[in-house]
Image (tube, one colour):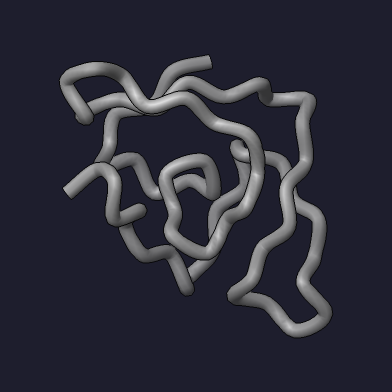
Length: 64
């Protein structure tokens, strides 16, 4: 699954520590929707899929 850099999903968020691949243009992120990563922005560091959304989203610095 591929997301544009401004898509407000965990896969494009700075707080998400899951596996993701940045496109050479630095405008897209490719993720495996079945993979869960640790969200460092939630209490207890929840394990969330890259498709998840929340109000604490911040754009991943690599996409800027």
